[in-house]
Length: 324
Picture 1 (tube, rainbow, N blue to C red):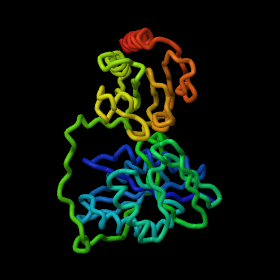
Picture 2: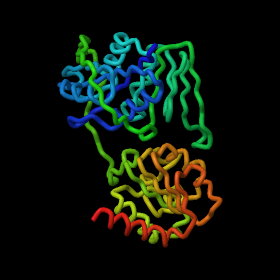
Picture 3: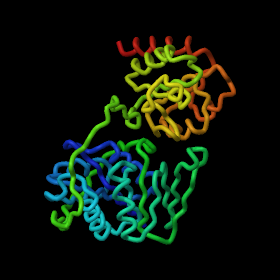
Picture 4: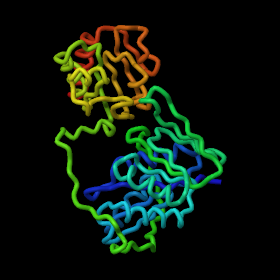
């Protein structure tokens, strides 16, 4: 019997957000026979529902109305509760995003069902859900096992699972549920964006990271040059951001961001567990370090033992030549 998984699709500015496709990937990873139902909540979202139907789901259910023009916990809570009643899923997956932090525990508590938050992987087999999440600042992997209850609620970390890249031809249905604006106890006021550069490494397809082995901040230029040549982003270990060489938004690891790019290049990074938990799900990992015993080589697909200041310029030149 297929495992039925309901995911909450997120969108903004007229487009589906990347976390939506990551949730679809996580749902397919959770069970080989996953029947994925995507819930889309908003106002005038029928065209997005049609787009979502082609992105790897089995069904799309959308709830729309003026009361759902912007996110509110009350509005989304009502929409999700209605969808759970209609779909009767085994699991509900929500992004570990500001909206997900807000609404997932609210609905789980109201339905009196368990919630596993901040997960990087979920496997559902024979009615038992095993959810992997970070614990003790990433020093341990916490395995949460939930059985004999449905649905379970899960929030998935951004970047923990690769976005689903397959296609589908799903059915699309509009929910009969209507959200009355007068019942909402909260209202949307505004969204304020931070003044940083808006860097979001969790969505980068290529990341080149520098660690303590780079030596000093000026020498990070050779790492950034390779990242630029590959069309990627510059990442860093905690040692680099703690030293003030780069802003915290570049930090990858348990106290930074979790990423799963197609290509991850670690330069002068020893491979402490706190860093590895944040990048080990990358599609292809290349490690460059002069220490042959560095732990980073244990998770790398290709390991290069040598001087990164000789290797990186050569790689940068080769990447530039390949593009031209």
